Image 1 (tube, rainbow, N blue to C red):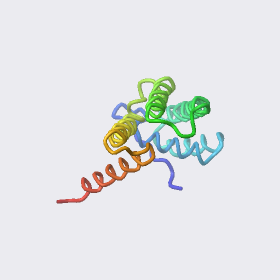
Image 2: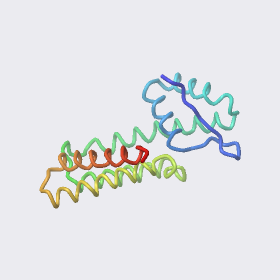
Image 3: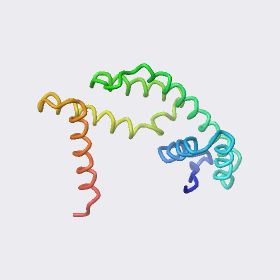
Image 4: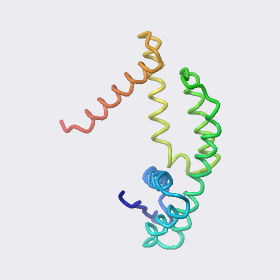
Length: 155
């Protein structure tokens, strides 16, 4: 596994963005608390004490968020409707704001926009094509993948 790569803002603070979230998420998923914190300390050591503390705080916020999310989604239906999926996204957004405060947008904004678009596209496909939720989401994901590939391909 590649080590986390944290960066600093121009003010010398930990840059809290989607990459930092991905690194924290990966470290938390692969290691117990003590090992995770040791890896974060190692990754942030060149950045200074403030960045180290901020990475540790972000890790603790992540762990608490994951626990809250697991608890909140435990009673959700196995086969959610489009309304259930929208409610779940709203729940996730509320928990993210609760646990990450002003950093929630920087950590999850692009992902949430993508999820919202996916749900909008799926709902449209269900309405116009009579597709099931699973079929509509699959179709929306395939369309978004094609669009991303087309955008990445030079003319």
